[in-house]
Image 1 (cartoon, one colour):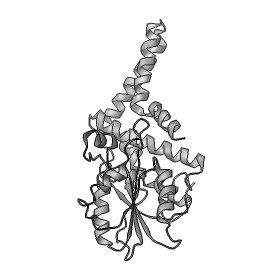
Image 2 (cartoon, helix red, strand yellow):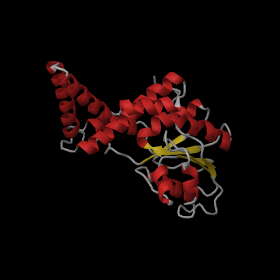
Image 3 (cartoon, one colour):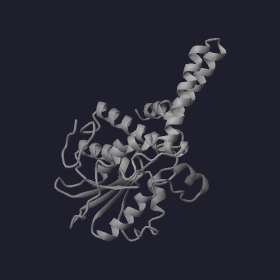
Image 4 (cartoon, one colour):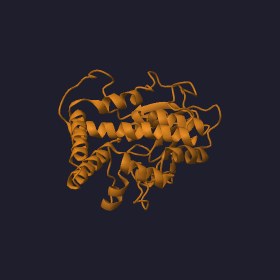
Length: 269
């Protein structure tokens, strides 16, 4: 399933789909089927213009980010903190011999803040390599070498470096942490990833309190922002398509407790 998911995403990425659409249109045109070819080319071009001008990525991503809010007041007591990998570019870190942080570096900042706030809480960092090609290096050991920078040098941390996806984060993290049934655990991951993560942890028998980070949308302050930024809007749209596809796939596979997990309730479908 891991290999299949990675190969499927190569075709489902909005940018890749539009490139394939353009190529198909050019191929049809070269083969003499000009009408069909031009239809595909115009469709791809119009899609690119819409994505560049309208905030379609924001519209698709905002419901994911707004599903779970960060606690207005932190619990008085927390038994543990679990952080999902994704803050480090594993391949570049391995190639360069030093940590190369990615777009989700806020997960590490949240880890440092929460660990300081809850000095007695257990800490679990779960993250291997989500790459199909590069499985030699794992994220957890890389972050472990940064422990002193995060204020964790003297703190016992459970480092889980085999998980390749959210399902394995939950299953392997649970086996490592062995949380008590009535314990309180904070789950740190990206806001747009939180619905799938919460549903997956619930399905694994591990209820968690969401602590979302690294937002990509503004929470509805400017829902009709018009501009001309293809790369930014396409990035947001790709993230949204990946998460919505992941939610459907995980629900079909029984890896999440609901199609669109909701706060405080176990089911939302």
